[in-house]
Image 1 (cartoon, rainbow, N blue to C red):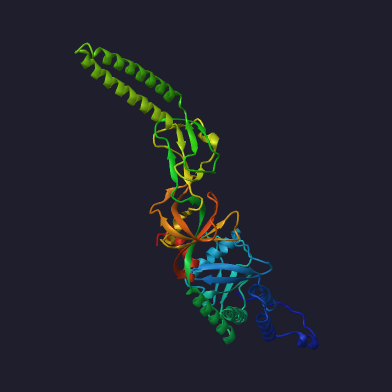
Image 2 (spheres, rainbow, N blue to C red; image 1 turned 60 degrees about the horizontal axis):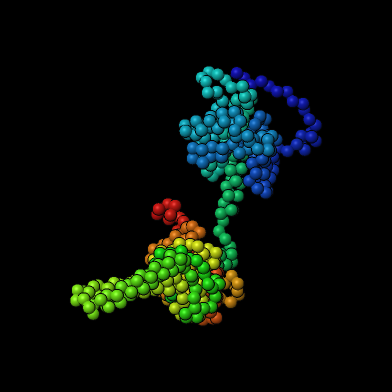
Length: 450
C-alpha cells in the first residue's frame, strides 16, 4: 500500500534556511552525548533527544549481558518500572529475540502478544533495534513506532545507536583507564611499604583474666569427721606457728574422754585389788595379769580420746596469712577427714594464675613473657614468666572453658594475694601480616572447612 502523502505548509526561504538539517541535528546530538556528565544523563538523552528528528512513539535503552536483558531508560520517564506488566512483557519478548539472534544486528519487527494471532494493545507496535557500537551484544536503542518507519529513518536510527554506543563504551573505558605514572608509582610504593611492614616479626600475644594466688600454700584440713564450731581468726589475718585457727565441735569427744578416764580409774582399782589377793592366793596371780592388761587398755583408750580432743583445735603449722573467704560460710559446716578448711600462705610468695582463651593456646609456652595490669593499678604492669600451663581446658566457675596457666613474678613489687587484672601473654614471633589476618583466617576455615 502506498504511503499516504502528508501535506506540509511551505515556509518562507528565510525560515527554511534557519531550520537545522538532519546532519546538523545529528552533530548536535553527538556533541551533547559526549558532554553528558554521567551514564544516567547519557541514557536520558538517548531516549528523548532523537525525537527531534524522528517521529517515533518511544525509545528504550536496552542493556544486554549474555542472555540477560535490562530496560534502563524509556522516553518521557525518569526511570523504567521494570516490574510492571508491560516491563515484564517487553523483557520477555526481547529475551526471546536474543535467543534467536535477532538483536545482534539492526533488525525490525512487529510486536505480538504471547497468544498466537492476538495483536497487543500497545499503540507503538512497529519496532526497530539499533545495536550499540563497537559491541553489538552489549545492547542498543529500541525505537517504537505507530506505523512502519520510513526507509529514510533507518540509517538515522542506526547512526544514533552507533553514537550513543560509542560514547557509552568510551565512558566505561575511561573509568578503567590506567593510572597516571605518578599515581601508579605512589600506589606501588604504598603496596610495597605495606608488604614490608607485614613482614616485621612481632610476638603472638593474647589477653587473659589473671589473679594473684599463693605459691605452694599449706592446706589446713580436718583429721577426722566433724563439724566446724568456730573460726578463731579473721579472713586473711597474719598468723604465727602454733596459733589456734579452727575449733571443731568437741562435745562428743569430751564425753568420750570422760568415759575413758572413768574406765581407767576402775581398771586401776581392779588391778590393786588383784595385787593384794596375789600375796595370799596363788590363783589370784593369774587375775593380776588380766587386771594389768585391762588397765593398760583403758589407759590407751583414754590417751586416744585425749588426742582426738586435742585435734579439735587446728593450729597454724607456720607463719603466714590465713586464706579463706568468710567466717559465716565456714561456721557450722560439716567436714570429712582430709577435707580442706583454709590455707596458710606466705604473702611474699605469689604466682599469677591465668585463664587463657582456647583460641590462643599457642602462646602458652614455658618461659613466655607475661605482663599483668592490675585493676587497682593499671598504669604499672607486673613482669612475670610463664612456668606451667595445663594441657587440657578446665571449666571456669563463671562458665566457659579456658587453659589454666601460672606465671612467676620476675620484677616489681609483690602484689596482694587475691588481686585481679588482665595479663598479656607474649608467644612466639610471627609476621605482622599473619597477626592481622589470623582471626579472619580462623573464622573462615571454621565456617568453610577449607
